[in-house]
Image (tube, rainbow, N blue to C red; front, side, top):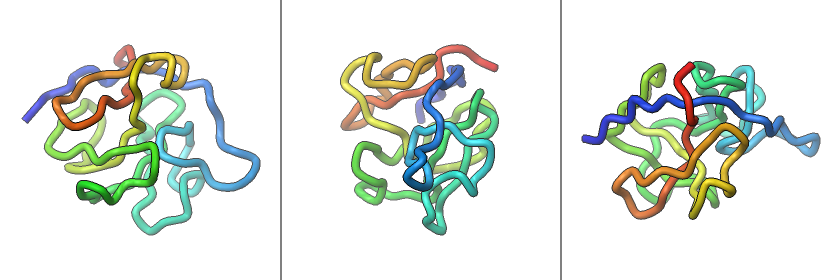
Amino acid sequence: MWRASLVLVALAVGCSADGPATVGDACLDFSECAARASAACIAAWPDGYCTELACQTGSCPSGSRCAQGLMFDGVPFESFCLTTCTSTPDCRDGYSCVDIAQAEDVCVPENPR
């Protein structure tokens, strides 16, 4: 199990005016995230981070992947979706593209809160 104590910081992209935010968007609470039963907001990450819980490989929305068995400070979930990336410019401001030893890299906060 990979321990990512890099609960890292801050986001600049807000919620879409066209509807609920998607995985990786900023949020204050789960109601701002996608309208799926598994939607959640990682409020411990600055500006929040929309995600989906209890995911399995292949169950996350397009542009995201399921992170299973990872531990991030302030994130009490065993599996959740994270935005995929190929390099840091693909991530929101304040986030980095990180290799979590899975098929794709993901965007996580840069600095602990």
